[in-house]
Image 1: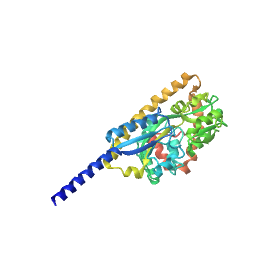
Image 2: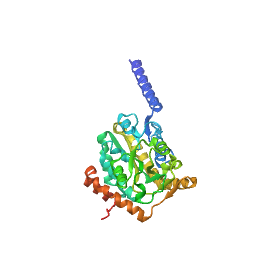
Image 3: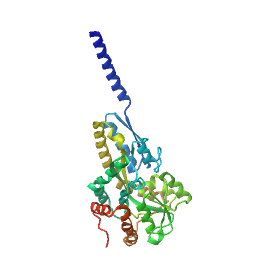
Image 4: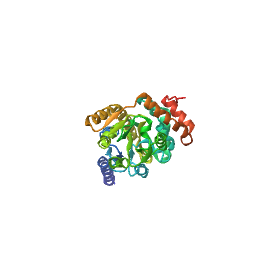
Length: 336
């Protein structure tokens, strides 16, 4: 009897040990897919999250990063996230409109966040956090906002006055608000996968791109575009999101460690955006291939006035209360 009991005890101990070894050998894997290059604020933020997550979980979590659309193109990734084919993404928040949460397009309203502090006020506000909660009805949990800097416009001709934009085909993120922005200044907006933009610019399928400086550099848009206008009409913002079922199923201690890792990675990514924007601008200027132009206050004001009609026209899509909440969070006062 005692031998039998002893045998059971040894067997139990062996199973526990084997289970522990298996757990050590088989960490929880988070596939983190994104469309940007490694040397962008998004790319560096993802790498920082990987480092911190693996350190703070003592190897119980492994984060595999797939940059540059290596795993999924931007039109596919949110569906892949819902299906569990990937666990984490950092998509442009413009994508949440076609995803079924159109209220997110309020972030694309032109000239609402004229500087980084105003964007960060929105991201850190109750309004910003409530917007992330809206994603949960789609099986997605929002973890953080990452800023990539101001949007600029690339082209093969100088873009200074409002009239210069008329008739141009410009690639945009898929967003009804961005589309309305472009139409308000006479542009013919075009949507396509981010990974296809360089070739479209090179072959003339589109005349230019609505993008950010770090992408203009790392995706080499400046090699096939002679001009960049620092229009600064809105921010390029991302939301780091995770499959909700996967996230909720994590052990509590693991989830808490990942939350702190994400908070610190967010601080890191957002701290890079201004420096990266400046560095990208200097490198593009040094290439001698592209002229960078900053509109005068009068030129920018002309474009701002043309775009302000979008705020009113989008009330039926975004909701007046939602727009007013965005104004309040940003500290934005619409011109009379």
